[in-house]
Amino acid sequence: MRLLKLLASVCTLAAVAVAVPAQEKRVHRHGDLSDHVHDDDHGFQYDHEAFLGKEEAKTFDQLTPEESKDKLAKIVDRIDTDKSGYVSHAELHDWIKHRQRKYIEENVNKHWSDYDKNKDDKIAWQEYKNTTYGFYLDEEFDDVEDKATYKSMLTRDERRFKKADRDGDGIATRQEFTAFLHPEEFDYMKDLVVQETMEDIDKDGDGLIGMDEYIGDMYVEEGEDGEPDWVQTEKKHFSEFRDSNKDGYLDAAEVATWILPGEVDHAHTEAKHLIHETDADKDEKITKKEILANWSMFVGSQVTNYGEDLTKRHDEL
Image (cartoon, rainbow, N blue to C red; front, side, top):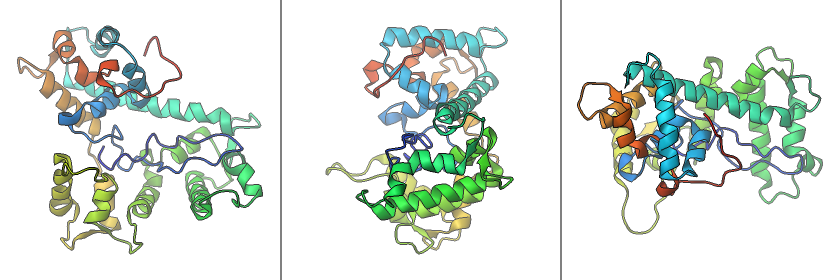
């Protein structure tokens, strides 16, 4: 993931008419598989979310190691579509892509009924606005501590909604609402993703992202233990790769290259990583035995202490 804890689950809105939504960034900046930094030295939460999907990873976080291994064994049987007894790169890649698509579909479905108030299977801008901000709109946000921030959020939501609304009728179909919640998945929304990214990270408003702003969006120094290794790696990436013209800043074009890297397939990269770490005999495919021997990389459990409060547990994926 890198950028960062960003989105923390794209658009987890507070869908209640009497509550302004939480101040959160709502875009997966470059279509990555997790909001966590991919740093195996400090845990496998990135791998868990990539392999299971963000919501299902939370479920596994609540399981005991034994329960987690049992469910993982069943998943391996599903991934091995040709029933060869091995999981190939292609099979693992397809599984990861499937889990990411399922996460997006479930995320949209979770919010759909909250906003489709008249049950016409469409969501008008007015429905979304009233449901999300309604109570405070009547007061012009006077009861909100940070009035300017929430007004800015409303303006930003309206801009994104209009961009997602391809026919400009002020009403979002399910596909258009998916583009609103997950703009990083749609080509016609990608210029907006770049714009919002610049707005989020460019704290001094000069239209450029400096090294401090780039790192500050991912990491806030705590204590006196020094920066983790991944921060040093990101600084190197900024200087050597992101800042292509070597002027010390990222402009919009460089940000687009960074967060919208064309044909880069994160599922391909993650499948390759998981096989490399798990393939004990180096035959470039992995068995159920090899996967279960490295179960903690693929799935979480209570022992990992990554868990969050969970409202439900799924019996089956």
